[in-house]
Length: 515
Image 1 (tube, rainbow, N blue to C red):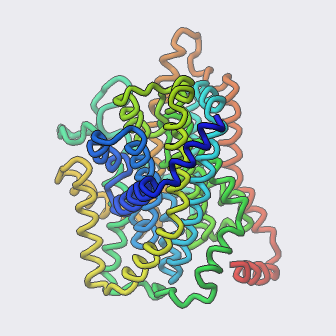
Image 2: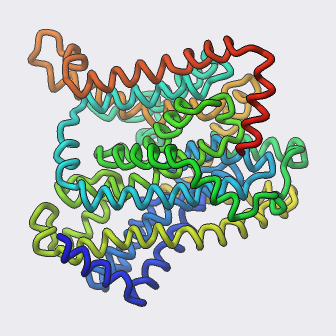
Image 3: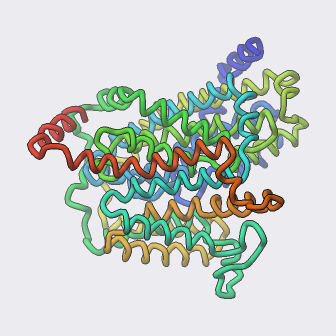
């Protein structure tokens, strides 16, 4: 192993390989920053260009592109409240409020350093823990995936700190939207109103753009100006070095979120869209000041971005060792491996060890390159957006949103879905129901439904099939996590109510000094 690891490191230090990683990272960041153009789509589009290349540089290019695309989604999530990829959903929760406070550069630094740490930890786990962790992931059946989805839905209790009832209503709306189309198990057609375009369900990316971006565009047009606090933060006293130091001074959040991302990435089918939400919830649950989340808390941005880049390395663990893709882009890269006659498993590491470790270490090199490239490109993009007048900003965001919604299936119908959901989201926001809870229900609804139906079907021989959801050891652990996650915000609220009123100013002043 160590000999192949050394050879892979030397291969990555070659100028031609470094240039290839840089090209992949930059192009991935550019695609990820465009709403609607997901990492999966980008990797798929890049595959034909690698056919004429040798296996090693071809895989390195795909891996660097994937790593860069996952990170690139943070830019638009922070600057215009439009998650570039589903993996950046939670980044928008606090990234955009920071932009509205004139601290967008701080948010970009947090996203960059979080992505770097998450990417590195995911690669380390891939190198040293691949076989045992991949074997453990096979123990997850439909019941466990159902409880993972339930655990994700308990995040609503954290997101809806203002009104739990309104949060639950938003989650229920998302779950209802997730039922549109052909049932994932059984094939029943539901709520399509006779329109064949809805048989595939409501596509996630147009829904994300509609729920997050369109309400902000409407608000910009209605106000004809930015929010009062929107300002250029180029003169922030801390400076770039101070912001980087502040972010790296939160090692617990960085490490915890990266490990969550790696663990979720190992589970086939979960991916960054689940990992960033779970990590965000855990960061809020562990925080001493959870009330600041959703209002511009840098720990929320760090948690989301550390987790989604952690899934890159984590997702390759079952892909390379078992041939079971952890995430959709992994499935495409697995296909490239098979096209070159490389079969996943122990034999792959033994017979093609240099190739495998060159590819793995290229992911780490890409994560390192994201820091200088991301800070330079991110700060430039941030200054451009801040300087752009509203009369140009609103139409620009609208055009990008329409292109992103159309690009998924080359369908004008998806654009109408985006606009319809955007208008509904704007009206719901007026009554206090945010888009975050709706997205949670939409993302996790199909996972929960598939796990529930498959779990009952696989246990149909038992007298009471539903009992298998409460008797499997891993399910019991997940149930305990669900209960803790659901009850924790209530306990924090009670603790906050017991805090003497005279202590509140001191706590707020201490927090401001730490930030």
